[in-house]
Image (cartoon, rainbow, N blue to C red):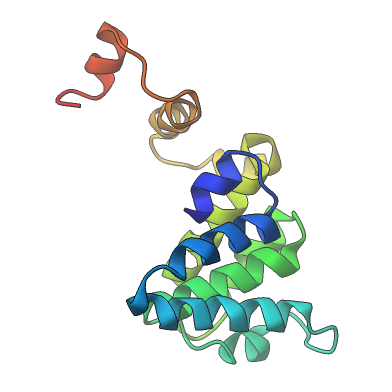
Length: 154
């Protein structure tokens, strides 16, 4: 839901609001909503410095809720800076590859291709395929042979 809202053009705060509204419909989403709340509160705290110690207040990222909270926090405090947000998300002692991946997805969906520095894209394995899938995500399903060839069995 969050990534979908960002791809549709929502800013991060409204996308989080809409995601939260959907989560409220499910009784088993309490931990996820609490994690999002904590991340948003911490990001709004002007006395909290974006650093490893602050991130550790959200957990270590070993559970889905903690990883999401860290990624949301890093995306919020990054204020549109992909490099800063992803680096912050991976520089802690927990499950940093997961938190970095989630933060990268959030920031990438927010900023689009132009918001991601070439230093991140140049060494990317299978870059042409990843860019094609990203383009197709934006375009949406199209009938025809090209789509079937790229995604057989769809």
